[in-house]
Length: 97
Image (cartoon, rainbow, N blue to C red; front, top):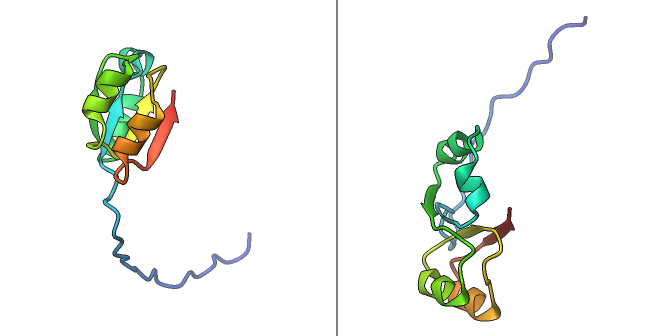
């Protein structure tokens, strides 16, 4: 083997954005909530605030919750145009599990 490569010292840069850092996640998929495994620890280690609701949720419940989350980790919930519009501008991610 040849000599190790010398890497330059890391330069850190902080960027200020008008968007909030993603922290609050609505989790409605019961299979994710009920299945043991490393995913629970991984989500907690990422610094996310997980709010669990037993889904699938109807549009009326989604509208109640809309606007206070940065992400939805969902199953078969009724995520309608009205839910999305009420969730903006805070909502950044919708992920179907």
